[in-house]
Length: 306
Image (tube, rainbow, N blue to C red; front, side, top):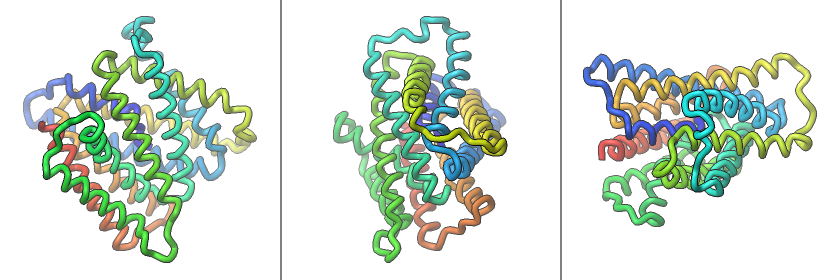
């Protein structure tokens, strides 16, 4: 899963970082961000395989525990106990609850949906954030960005195909996930004005770990196969490596240069769904994926430029 927590923190942090001059540096940044999106597609594919055999709560707990440990070690080592300091602990807890809820919806969605379609629908999140920013925060949105929002939702309809006889009701779950992710990112934009991204990630990881630990007694039986534990570990590797590559990418190039390439994850996810799970999207689904990725890339590029 393209972790909304880490992605939001990294992108907001990128606004404070100046891209190094020179095309060579930009090419390095693009290569790193493409590698990161490949890792995120691998994370989604591994989560789909794990979710079919491991209880959702258990898989979530394992992932969040490792993430909290890694984030805590890095942030506390750099900033000490002051990394926890904030004037808005309630909002941080709420953000952690949204993050955990999004994780549960993602795992459940991947049980029924192909990786490519799931990833494409998740790319609606930045455009829904645009709607929330315009309606709730009073931000001005250009006519072009409204057109891109409309185009993306049209692409979502092509993916879902609501007029088909075998309507895929499971696709409504990732649409709900888009709403949760959008609320999460709007809350992130509020908190990042006063707290460092590292503080946001630290609080979120801890809240998610605490919530899933409390629910662990009702998760079910622990997996007995070593292969499942290996897949759980592979999830952590893909997640950690992807986020590290994404952070390094923003050290080489600006957000306006790199943001459109984040949508390469849709292509990697579709390819992984075909190679790993044997799923080939039909023409209309593939067209919807292309429309969502194209509108999303154009919208985020324009926003990053602005």
